Length: 225
Length: 275
Image 1 (cartoon, one colour):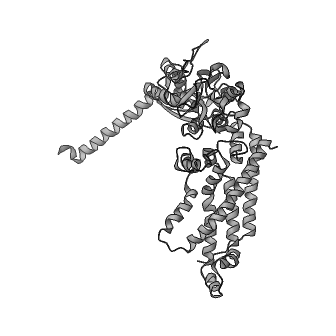
Image 2: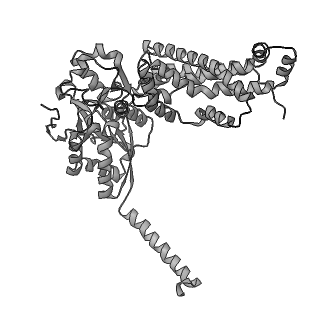
Image 3: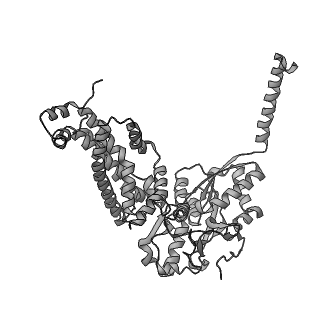
């Protein structure tokens, strides 16, 4: 059976993934919208930056976060100056790391969804004198619903599986930064394979079910070339 | 020019091939081989020096992997291609023996480790460790006590001082003693328990502030080496273990602040705490 420490890790991980996904939807929606509709020439730079966590080793991200958010880094000095202290080894630090780490998993599905809608429905709404915000909520949101579902599920699931970044900046603190993947490593290194199996199998089943739900209920709109 | 003619070019080529063959055969003649070694993270710096000395003396090549003893043990149990295991404790080499993965009677203590409470900043750690009682800090880093013997020793020290409970919320854990050192040296943790070997330089701790924890405050960190069955037929692996017990290697080990076990007796560690 999972131990109490395992349950604490599971709850913490769910909290981290939930909060991260929420923040990413709030930040990612305007960003994806802007990336879809902006004609700015430097847009590809932003696109590349957003996609960076897809290819970057988590250790690189974790290393830079440790240095930047540490007491000698610019971010660390800023957070210290405004009374937050430094972020490594804190839950808040993990949230920030996770937001960066899972950014493309939320922004890219949204961007795809917005691109698929195209400009035509927006123009029609405009001729009907809909305000832009109104258009967004009554036209774009319903049309982009599959994109939002994909973004939510992928952002959540990807944060659940976070490991390399947490290893670098987390400090393995029960109840604060000891997420499921860290706890699995602890069990394996301590030779407690049975304990590791509980968590690992749980993650496997959960991840599979999540993707199964995604593919069953949100069939992608087929694009014709 | 004469040697540019077709015939002599071929001649040169032949000579070249002959020379490279001689070099190739020559190198196999002295039995130069690779040794894959799993090394506990605390022994990283001494191992680099020792490996260089061994490579120079024997012509063999050392390929070392560093990590927490717990992680290395699990990798060995699961078929990692290591031939020699330098653990940070005795328990894990014994576990290797119990799993029938070690060459019988090959285990010996190569070093006895020292724990030090260290800060990268001056004036944080006093030479009696009173800072632990004051608790005037945000984070104290230790190695994972489940997998790294230096982490276990850190817990024993804090427990012995009666401060463990009070400090518990401030403890951050590194995956190995190497990561623990990184947490402290980067300043993310103001202080932490690390291995003396990580902060010692030419026989003294030159950076930051420190307290070398008295040896009677924790179970001795006897670090054992063992020859794995995978290295049983590799002469270079055996040679490395022999070299580890040579005077040259012992001098390096002692210079990094370890006590070196002499059969039957234990050498004294030099006291680095200011009086």
